[in-house]
Image 1 (cartoon, helix red, strand yellow):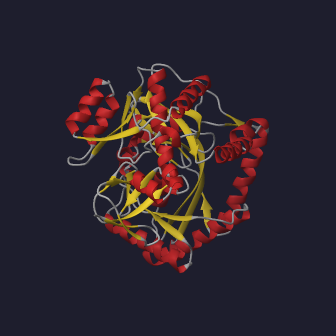
Image 2 (cartoon, rainbow, N blue to C red; image 1 turned 120 degrees about the horizontal axis):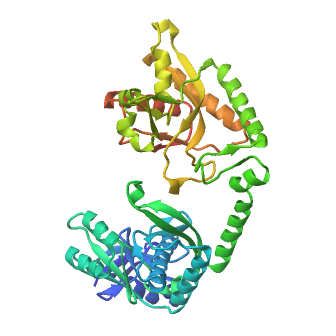
Image 3 (cartoon, rainbow, N blue to C red; image 1 turned 180 degrees about the horizontal axis):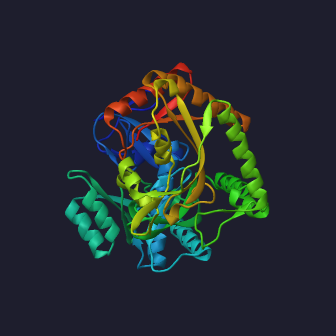
Amino acid sequence: MPQITLPDKTKKRIKDPITVEDLAKEIGPGLGKAVVAGKLDDILVDASEEITEDCKVQILTAEDAEGLEIIRHSCAHLLAHALKQLFPKVKLAIGPVIDEGFYYDILLDKSLSDKDLESIEKRMMKLAKKKYQVIREVVNRERAKEVFKSRGETYKLKIIDEIPTGETIALYHHEEYVDMCKGPHVTNTKHLSAFKLTRISGAYWKGDSNNEMLQRIYGTAWKTKKELDLYLKRLEEAEKRDHRKLGRSLELFHFQEEAPGMPFWHPNGKTIFTQIENYLREQQLKRGYQEIHTPSILDISLWEKSGHTEKFNQGMFRTESESREYAVKPMNCPGHVQIFNQGLKSYRDLPLRLCEFGSCTRDEPSGTLHGLMRVRSFTQDDAHIFCTHDQLATEISNFIDMVFYVYKDFGFEDIGVKMATRPEMRVGNDKVWDESELALEEVLNSKDLKWERLEG
């Protein structure tokens, strides 16, 4: 008989085999009703998982953060189930958990409306109230392909092709509907009651603008109706403060279809914009920065030399004139380097701090645009410091001090610090990146700042 160890260190001999759910019922009827999943030796499992050997066991309910996440993930499957019933021809892509909710990406031959969202949510409620069992089935690759090929689920077939050989493939059966997921998920839809579909947006398959645009349906889920209502109330209050609404109501700026992601600044908005720009200019100039201005369009050869055409090609707008190809600048770096390159420089000229309020334009995917938070046309308060290796730590320290000064001047006190390391798509060799990352890390530690590493 296997021996299990519970979180309170209690040891218990159990009948072999027994599921996590049955164990929860043995411990107490309340826990038996509330269990949504479990952990065996710190590995998340479905409540239907059998315990067959000695292990540590934790019963998860909606009270646990991991339990609530499982409920949200299961709501994504419930959403897909409802979609399949209402729109049988829909193609399902992925349905992951996100902060405070979930989403599902779908391909459908019609654009969903808010009215459609209401109908889908009602169908989800109807399905959840049936309290049907959710059955997990582990299958091999061939069986998984057979299931989704027969259902015409092209995206699921693509996902299967990317699953490493030997990795477990699990299907989750929701009555007539089948989804594929690592899990775990709830074993019964009785646990899915406090949810709400919130909005629809566009999203490219795998986040690649070369792929087809899908529709993304967002939702949220909570352990109780009361918590859901509180969350929706917070959303409602936040919406009143949404900068896009304030932009219109205060006549600060607007967007229109003819210039997607490119704001039109009205007199009121431009006044605020200019005041902020002047404040930032003052802070930089008194710290030894020199303001410059560089062209908005540069010959493509400069972008090739800088590595942007190789690493950032999809984000650049291009144009031609007199048989020459140009790119609209997505960032200011190459232009600043051109200014540094003019004339001879001595070590006595360093550090040289150049700053610019540069107008940049990037070909951001339309589905990612969001008010002023994600745009195609923007002013980048940008600076580049040209210095010796010995000056590096001092310069890093000084600009960190300036950033904190400015943030606090704007009323921000709780400032999070993340140190981004080298991305996969980058210029510069590893030696340069090693030295740069080390210098950043040493300065952050010397300032006794709480910070975290953001890999890539």
